[in-house]
Image (cartoon, rainbow, N blue to C red):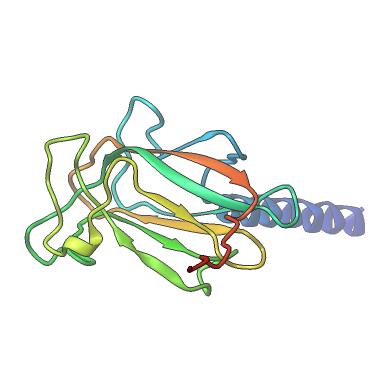
Length: 173
């Protein structure tokens, strides 16, 4: 009976640990090609305080690339220093399957909100901005971080997948 009780406790502990690890590993939405990618507030809410999420998008078809096109942008910016590049809350986009990949930049902006812009103009994320993977896997990774106050309405980006652009050398005559 003692062995059975210890075994049951061990399996219960294992189940709790696996649930915890699964929860920690689930950092954001499951979004595929052709679908919208929203902040945690979804299409109608605001994102939360102290968020830190990582979402990786990879194409289903080998040889294709992922492109994110922003259709709505309201991520807290400041004319001061902020946390990163004049942003209190920000998205960082990586050209690859993880955060060890090259960064395409840190971005925020409130074009869809009250029009606030970051103090660093290179960090301004605007409606229509698009980011395409250039790495062999075709993946993009997005990290979102928010501070402890002021939630905005976030973002919506379309995730699209397709062949990389055909770049042929120009002909001169």
